Structure formats: C-alpha cells, structure tokens
Length: 625
Image (cartoon, rainbow, N blue to C red):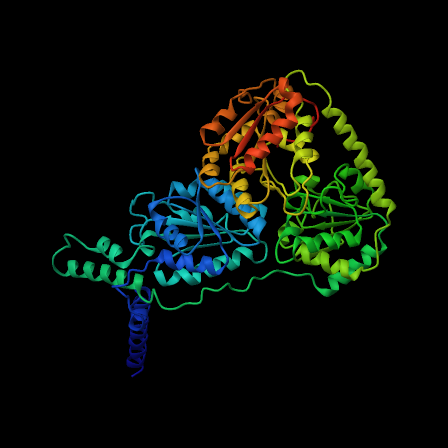
C-alpha cells in the first residue's frame, strides 16, 4: 500500500510537471494569448506606425537617421505624423545630432539606424551620450525574429554590444510589444541619471502582415509529419507576431523618476553655506537637466552671490560678463575656499581626481548618480555632505532657504580681479606675431567679439578648441556644446545639426581643429540639403597639435601627427556651402570676412572659415591623455 502511495505521488507530480510544461510551451508559443487576441490579417498597418505614435505623444520632433531597409517603416510613419526625418552622411552623426537635441530641448533625442554596420557605426556616439548623461533613444533594425543567428544579412548579436552602453536594451519579438516597450524606454532614458536606451526591431515586426506573410511561406516543405509540424510552427509564429497588434494602447508618457535631496539634507547645506566666508560653486552639466528651467537656476545662483566655475553644458549659465562667474585660476581659488559645492561636477580627471580640493574645505557634493557622486572619495577627497539628487532643483531650494543671505562680496571681487589679470595676459598673447600664419588666439578673440548674442558654440577639437574654451564666452545658458568627459572628436557636425534645428534663429558656430574637421566635413552636404546653415571656424595648423606638443619633446618624433594645409574651404563649396580661406595676408580683413560669413549664413548657406594658424605656447603643458 505504501509503495502504491509513493507511485501515485510520483505519477501525480509527473502529470503536474507535464501539464506545467504544456502550459509553458503554449505561453511561449503565444497560443494562450491568441485565444483572446487575433491577428488582423487584412490590416494594412505596420509596426513603424506604432513607433511613430509613441514618439509623437512624447513630443519628439526630429528623428535622425541614415536610411536602411530594416527601418524604412519607422521613417515613413514618422514623416506622415509630422516628425521631421533628418538623414546624415554617417550614423555617428545621427546619434550626435540626437544627443544635441536632448541637451537643448529637454526631450529625448532619437536616432534610427539600420542593422549590423549601421548600429556598430554608432557605438562611439552612444558611449559619448552615456558619459555625457544625455537621454537618447537609439532605434536599430535587425534580422527577422526567426532568422537571427542563422546567417541573415547584417545579422550580429547587437544586444551584447549595447547592454554595457545603455540603461535599457530590448528586442521586440511581437508587434504588440512595440508601444509599451518604447514608452518604457523613453521614461528610463530620462529617469535617475539620464542616458541612452536601445531598442532592436527585427524587420518582421515593422512591415505589414501581407508583406511578412510572404516571407513565412515555405516553398518546398518537408513531406509527412515533419512538413506539417514545420508549416504549423511557421503559421503560428506569424499569427502570434501580429496577434493583438492593432488594439488600442496608451501611448502617453510614463512618469519620470528624478532623485531629490531630502529636506534634512538641504537644511544641513543651508547651515554650512550660511557660515562660509569663501564658498565656491563648481557647476557641471547635470545642473542643466530638466525639470528645472535653466533661467531659474541662473536666478538662484545670482541670488546666492557665490563665485561659480562653470563646466560642460553649464558654460554660459551666468551670461557673458557676470560678476560671480570666474573663468580663470580655479586651482588657486579651490585652495582658498572654505566651502566647495560640487553641483553635478565629478571628481575625475577634470578635477585631478579630487586632489585639487583642499582638505580644509567643507565639501557638498550633489549628483544624480551615486557612483559619480563619490568617485575617488576613497582616495583623494571626502564629502562633508553627499546627496544623491538633482543638482538644479537642489540649487533652487538652497537659494530659497538662504533668502536674504549673500556671500561676502570681497570674495568674488578678489577672484574676479584675478580673472581680469589673466584675461589681459591672454589678450596680450593674442597680439603676439606667430612665426607663420595667424595667431590662433587673435582669431578666437575676433570671432568672440563678432559672434551674435544668441549664438550657440559647438566645440570639436583639441588644441584650438582648448584655447577657445578660455577665450570664447557663451552668452547664456545652453549655448555651449562639447562632447563631455569622453573627449570624443567628431561631434561637430551632429551637434551643430541638432542645435540649428532646435534654435533655427540662432547663429550656430562649430569651432573645429583641422584634425577633428575630417570626421564630419561631409555633413556640409547635410547642412545644405536640410537647410541648416551653420558657421564653422577651422584652426588649420596642419597638425594634431595637442598630441604633437608632447610627443615630439618626449619621444622625439612627429610620426602620425602631421597633416596638410588642406583646402577645406573648397570642400565646403563642393557640398553646397560657402568656404573662405583666411591667411596672414588677410589679417587686416579678418573681421570683414567673418561678417561676410555671417551674412551668407543668414541667407541660408553653411559657411566654413579655413583659417591658417601658427603655433603659440598658450597651452604648453596641458594634458592630452
């Protein structure tokens, strides 16, 4: 009897497992779902329409792309719904343009590229967006759901490539998944620490049923039972692919989660700041992120009256000539400061990993990302208060809590006096005559003086751009774009494209080195076709100077550093723009040529100033690694 009981139990368990297995198989094959949701085989709709509907509901105005058959339905559907499709000459440019839109518009930037090499071409740009904390959606084509891993055209393991680079990665397996997946991805891109997200769209999830069904038809199926099984499996897969595809779904934005400082943390910071005699604020790119308007942050900083050093996207936050914006001698100021507020600023190489901070200073660190908040705090510095939260809203709450209190005025005045001394020295160095060609500092000063008040500056280069960071003054918030911590070259064309679309009334200046220009000079074709006239000023010294400056004295060779005084202005002409060559003999006409370029740009032509420059020792000793 006992044996019979055990046998019954075993048989019962086996039957239960078999039932569970059958149910699980039915679930995986979509049989359970198909009991209640049918495929509309006569519908002409396609998955690209679902993507477009979600993007429109989220306020997306532009999709940047380099076209490919895998993603054509998305592009066509977006265009029909009024989303502008902007095609570039390289996939990385499409992602850089989307990155710029994300930074300037407060929405998610969107790029769509085809499978395989289309996606691999974006890897550097996606990594740059990750490190710059830009909310970005990358849409990628892919081989059909049943063909992945079977040798289809341009089929690779794309998910493995992007999982280390993105906050969220998903591969669409059925058409009904498109709307919820895109909504989730867009929310994740903006939540917490913003960053890129990636969705892979197999080609059969994007085209209409009648097109996809032809690909599933088996011309010569195996005979007998195996043939029936194969035919059934393929038909079921097709039905499951489209089951419930066109049922009404919510496309509105999901809630975005943004970490905030607690009331207790803000109060402790208010007390620290109120006692400080020599406070300093280091403002990073995170301070420009939504939801806090940048003009409100500017007002808060002005009310506090604390001297500010601005980096990354926060350059220009205080306008051109603010008495509390300190541009020079940051290391000396940090040695004297009794309190330092790191508002979205990270203690990485840009702050010598925290070694420039004085151990005598009270340090308040605010950052959305815990890892960035405490980077190198185990070695070179220690925060007095570390807050994982949004820097922009924190500054508003701090200013409100300190209403009526201002930093002692002699402190920012003394730092500003140091600024004046240093900038006068820079101006004097700009007047020096170089051995050959034009002094690059003089060129940059001239551009800065003539630049329109609404200008946006895009920085793409090494030595020439490093000099521009000291000399050129953004006129307001969100008017400076640089790659960020990754130091990527080649951002210029894409950043300028995105910026001009976001701010069509503004002058958009690209400050290029002649090395970095080579990455995106072909985008002058894009500027022409899409009527986005920008101005590029190229510091042409026929060299990768930032590398050469150290490589030659240390290693005794200029190998791979030499370029040529190439006629880049003619290249711009060839792409439908307008190019100008500026040499030493044009020095007296420099201002006139710049004004003419501005006029050409206002009339609709992208312009390029190919400025032949000489060598100075202005940035001698600055790092290039």
